[in-house]
Length: 358
Image (cartoon, helix red, strand yellow):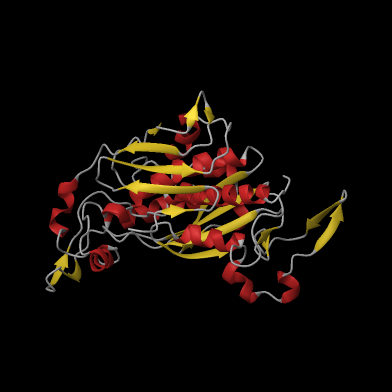
């Protein structure tokens, strides 16, 4: 299987399956003498960890990370960093009834057509369990970026219910189980998802990730555009079906004079009067906040019987059992943050390689 690695200078490779003994990641390209310890990574894994509310899967995984290589006496050595996360709460028996049946909306059929074999236990490699490894890599990336760059994510829509942007409060994000910046909408989502969960269904979501303090000059102008790499990074996250940078599709309804981010001088430096471009111009960061948004489809594993086929070509029905997120987008917030961190760390190292100063 190809395609398990991401990045150029800051490069990581994830491994493992949802119901295997462990998952993990190898991170390469980290400079030597970067302070790094397990708590630096664990704090981000704790944000993604399942079972923290009734709105996410009740699989109880501590997601305790272990550093196996690449760190000595609290500092990186410049060699590959291997991180291990044990799987401790697998219930593979929940999936025996779908061993030869393809779940609609899942990768079951496409994996089987490509490889002629698939790990049906929770989706195997196609499971969102893999994203824990990405979050671990993102924890290392944040250390490479340093404290001057802040990356924050928030859920801005669940199903048809979008937040009121005038009520945006970053402080509210940590105070509810949805990472919602609108306190009133968080309460509404709770009621909405309770109904979705009791009905055995699921809902989609939109996540917004904002990086502040990013210097101007990151990114390449043609095929390695910063926004192109961010879009690819977000699209590799399980269940993501669309990505926007800045105003994204909303820019279509703006006029040229409204969409153009006008500039002025302030204290000897360029300032922008708006940020419709999401902090990236011509594939290169402008020094403004970088804003990316991505859409996550409704969780495909639901309790409703659905029509499908089996490996023998028979038309059958399937009902998925097990522990699943009524809205997988909730736990995608720290995953989006991690992918943003990895892309920025990669481009920061590339920028330094050509003599760029930050």
